[in-house]
Length: 144
Image 1: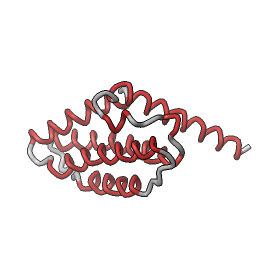
Image 2: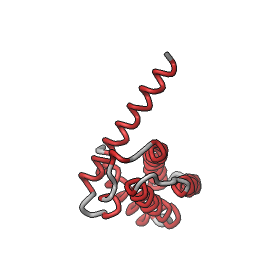
Image 3: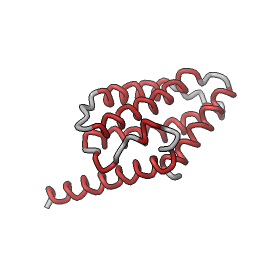
Image 4: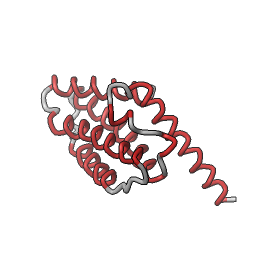
């Protein structure tokens, strides 16, 4: 029964992943040529872990920016390290098809934005700009 449960969980995760990517394409596909090249139906398990790690990183980054904005002495270093490690994970994807290659490139672009903000968000204005952009992206990509 455990094998069946794991298989069902994997299928459910893959379907959620594909729904997420279809949603992202609907919202941003016209502005983002790299995302436009992603066909969610062609993505395989090699991409799913990266996507869910990115969603978690994105949520955590927003929380850290809010803390920094509110004067908490939170450091952006952990976010920067996690984003760099996730970039390494993306770079290890061996695309099985063109769609996975587009996905990997899109993830590199998105992670580059996170890294850029984590490295440069020093002043209150920079933190607010990063928070505004990250929140907008969350609302667009993740529908929240």
